Length: 498
Image (cartoon, rainbow, N blue to C red; front, side, top):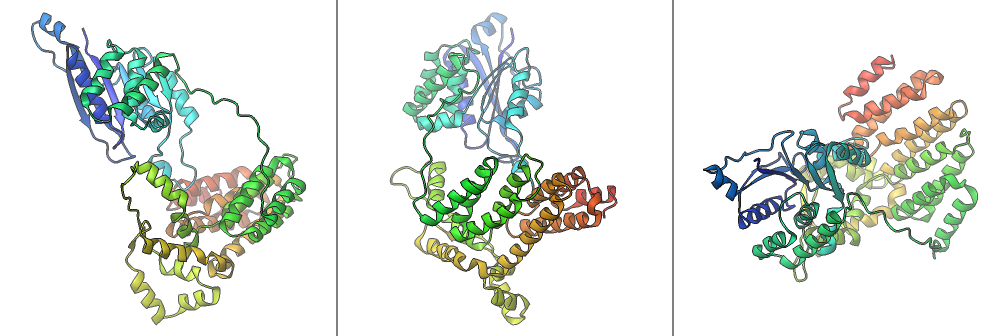
């Protein structure tokens, strides 16, 4: 007779150790020899801790004349149940060979906590969740999945209790629901919310809900009209002057730029898009949609005023309080690490003053001396909050700053390239519009993006009318592949554009 073998993959703070202890306690309380081990991951999002539990009937061990020797780590192809606290961890379990379609019941949450590699990618480095779900479903004998993080939040509990309930409902273990619930009660901590989370997850798994429950179709509600006359005029302009296929992007762009600056700035966005709308588009409006999306992103570039505004929003404080699970009566302190360089300071000032400071000697040295070390600002304190709100309020002078002049120049050049290219090759113009993806972020990240963007644009000018859309796409993807530009240089050399 073989032991029951259970592997748990969970990130720090998700209660993987508690879940393993529950399973061990349940086994020992019901006549099983149980053992648990754990191997911690490298870091919070580069590798989860793997907890491994083996259970063996004590009566069978006595009949065999001894105690079983239980393994310390799971082996590929030799695991009965795998529990994963997040979808990527389920994929990693499959990659390690812990999940097999002839044996393993896989229980996983479908929510995503993006890995370091996904977050640090210059482009969109996210793994496709649909593909990940399909791959893991093929690998497992049975795959029970739903958003367990949301279920835990709804019950006021933690994801370990949801995983425990799903494990009970799966029927993969020879124990009753009452035996598993008794385990939670013996723990004596957070019993009521844990049992609530357990019960909901048990019902989903036991009821055969192996996949996401499709949301109920919501009745279509009329879109409320903006109250502000200037905003209402912008919305009406989008609805009357632009094709329906692009209106969703344009309305989002208007919303974003009003939030970033003001209605007049959103009006400039629509003026620019009106010129793009008149360009040849092959009848599918793809150029209009892509330019609308990327122009809105570029026009809402991240400067010091924008960063300060984002860090002091009420919605951000609410989100942090929710993630930290702050209880009534508890005090939350939020510390922001700020390290503005001389260049960011100059870019925030009016153009003439910023250029003077950037080219000065003694004033420049004094500013660099005071900014060479970062500082921590507590935005949850009145002093820290008012300090950043003062910086955020400087957005009213944004269009007179050195940074705005530079960004505006690059945007106009980019739009002119798109317009000229669309006359002869609309598909290449779409690829040009998407090159804005190279320009993003703040500080050093922005500098690297601009450097890569300028390199790609020089290659476009060098190739001229002979440049194929697929070649430009390859150059752009190479620029997004690594921050040092090595792959971009290799791609340029391959196409004789270096």
